[in-house]
Image 1 (tube, rainbow, N blue to C red):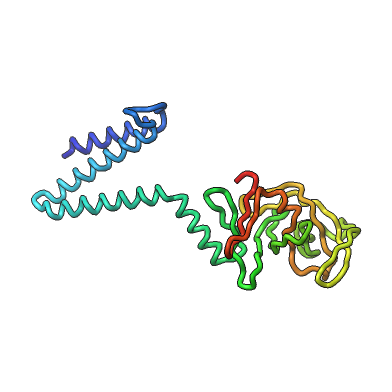
Image 2 (cartoon, helix red, strand yellow):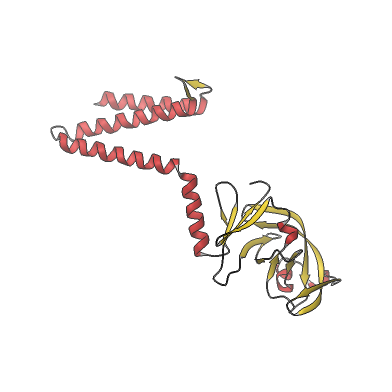
Length: 232
């Protein structure tokens, strides 16, 4: 069966050439699909050659081997065909196990699982530093705690507390700033207006409307927050 193996190698070489250099259609199929067909034929030929050599005189076992390889190839083809759906499922499982971690779907949307206390805590990056935010449509701007602001390079000496704001603890003053970048999953926005709260007046960062209003859409669907950026 060395001739069959040699033919299989020739077919594999032809598949590679068609895949990288083929254009248009061949035998009524797009070049990449034609290359895949040739490669599959070569692989099948090699498997059949191996079965004949290994199971000569034991055809029942040979047929079983062929069926096993056929089932394996079909399973791999099925996994490849549903790779986008499997990616979405894996991302959601990771997000569910670690609430707040963004899961990116095949369509580009970013989803976050709800925490046990009913809130959405969103893991993001501000000025390339990791921060966590509470999703808050009631906040007109993104708001940072004084500690978070300092962590991303906005020290007290750079802040001017001139904007009056209302918090759970009452009225206070906040400092206006502009974040160079604010990123959640694959969604990235530049030059985002934000406020920095006075020390001790805010416990958690708020993902407010100066970021959310830039999105194509955002919605709460069941226990998941869905964000869609302009590039999704």
